Image (cartoon, rainbow, N blue to C red; front, side):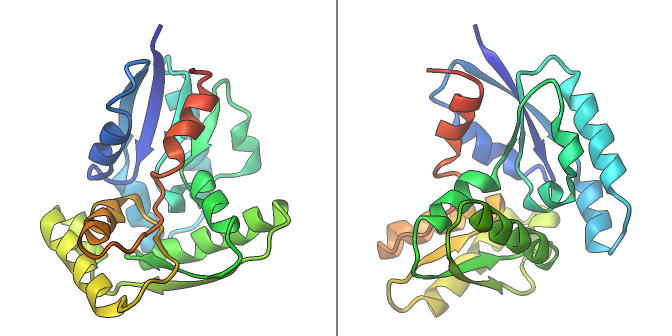
Length: 216
């Protein structure tokens, strides 16, 4: 019997990444929910958004699903602990990614395109590392004037901007990762071109989801 996984995205562009990640798993049926408006409010500095997050998660949990995958790190940062007591498991896309980062004690650079995502993601990473009793050496860098491209639907221009930054910045192998799902395609393309590994949120996600849904 298939398990229904609700996927909550901040932008429609993230749907393809999740569909591709689970394309070989017939046991999982993906149901997508998209709310770009909430992230627009965050970028504008709006406060008091946690009740909206709670309401949305409760509504999705009641849509006959077996789990909820949240693909937006900034959305995750808005969640309160009490919102986790739902009838279905909530899977945060950043936690498997954080675990990968915490398993290496060398200096690492984490790239972002959305400045509004940096503070919440880095705070969660440090909290996760503390809970795992791991010491990490990380710094965040923003690829400026790029995120608006993906929000305007200019996916090709967005990927090219990230690729250009990577080619101009990475002259030699180093530990680097991209924090946002929208950056994965460019990171994978750069890996093919330069044979320099880049960590991204999809790498450890599938096994985590299958485990949470009790598949396999």
